[in-house]
Length: 301
Image (cartoon, rainbow, N blue to C red; front, side, top):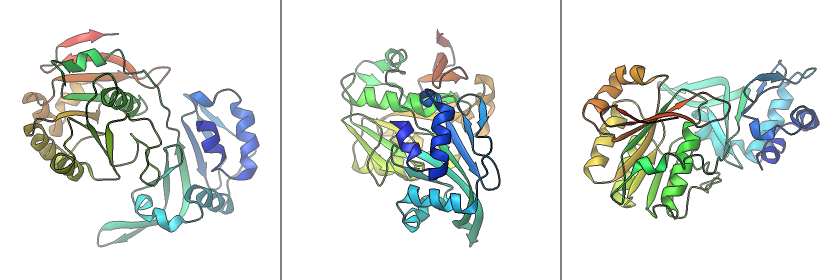
């Protein structure tokens, strides 16, 4: 249960306060923020503050100890990328004093800010769009487009679970660079991504895509938040191998996404056969429309 996962890693003195404030709203909880010198804040579609609280340096240390099992050094690689993953597959974004060596982030020390992003599983949220991805016993190359906080990863996870499961029975490889799809904790998925799914956790997308096709023989490759030249080049190579791809990308609107320099080639050369557009709503993963390769809308909610 997400609520218990979160309660176990926050400082003890805030636990009853958060439980009292949330009551029966745990399923709607999306974020809990801690900033040294400020009140604890939580978000369920609206911003709320735990009035009378003030996060201290000792509070932050206590929380980092809980999150890392008192072995923060074991998470140095994740922390250098600005986050760490906790049991349950929830991701914690962190900020503080950044240590840079040779132009690259080596570590983040004196962590002063932490944002716990709650990872919810919405089993069945992709059911309505699955028929549009299925064609002659294969999965179409599909791109999910949405702005932040619209449930791209939620939809992607449910698609993975269904395609790997009884719906399609395909061998799936997830390249999970930021541990958001499978929510791996120490290499083990915390989320249900299906019985025929292999996960390359914390692996750079471009590298992971090539590793997958060379050694894991996927029928479907799943990757989150593509963008940039290296991702596009790797994607082109994967598609040449006959492997289907399901990916996500940031985008507020359809026309805006098409104008992005790194995405124009994808659209013009019709690398993707299906586009799923999400919109902001009362719950994550709300579908706006489904479009075919040429951009023609074929499904509207």
